[in-house]
Amino acid sequence: MNSRITLKQMETLYWIVELGTFERAAARLCTTQSAVSKRIQELERCADIEIFNRNQRGAKLTSHGEELFEIARQMLLLHDQIFELVNGEASQPRSLRIGITELVAATWFPHLVFAIKERFPKVRIDPTVAMARDLFSSLEQDHLDLIIIPETFSLPEFVTVPISSVQNYWMAKKGFLKTNVPIRHRDLAEYTVLIQGDMSGSGVFLNKWLKNRGVVFPETLVCDSMPALLGLAVAGLGVTYLPYHFCRRLAEEGKLEVIETEVPLPPVPYVAMYREDRPHSFLQDVLQLAQSSADFESSPAISLS
Image 1 (tube, rainbow, N blue to C red):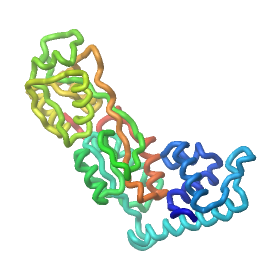
Image 2: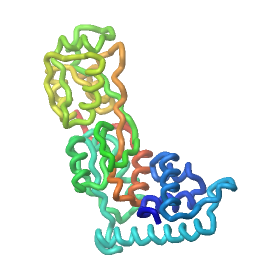
Image 3: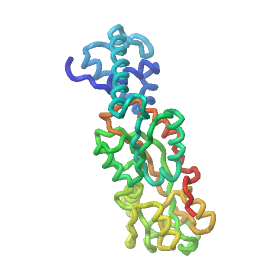
């Protein structure tokens, strides 16, 4: 062997054979088809064998490939058993340490919890609700297994999987702005602007977008907490960006109104992240459930009135 074979390579081989194609395996592993192909090429170099028969259509194993696949199956089974042993006896619930932002917690996270519980009845879910930068740091320190945050921070050792996106709108207390026509973002500089800071993933994303467009606000009030910004806006202390569905009830009651702009704010992409050195089929299942549960336009799980 030329170098060390990794569990990730063997896991990739297993899912290609189980699902029949590289494309399906990539979807199952929440990665790209090119990444899957690269892992198999590396595995073939390490093992010094040809795993798939290139002369046939589809993912057809060679005789050596069949032997390696059986080893991969056994390795993943042992990996799962070790995981359960480390986290308690096999009969005990599996633990999921998941970090989420305020917006996720207030909207679609209950749907994800229900989906996980239905799929894995014994799982113990340990959620942490915090700012995106704090969650990213906790994942880096191995205090969390999985985080769902805006796509603003990254490290090479983290796997990043797209989940959904959320659209923000400028909002203020009804009557705060003396205009009924769409305005430019830079025109908001006439007012106090309430923005999120560097601890917030949405704040980092949107503030960078505004800066790149040359929009500068001379008078700002920085607050990382989205519910706090909502309260400040309702109090008439400034104009801020918020997801409409997060505060729809207040808008319907006439306490807030949407400020129309000539160019809309960009959607904020949300991703799930986990450490690349912790591959596990359970996390892949949770990611698929998160992708199907994510709906930032659903009714908030908490009352904001």
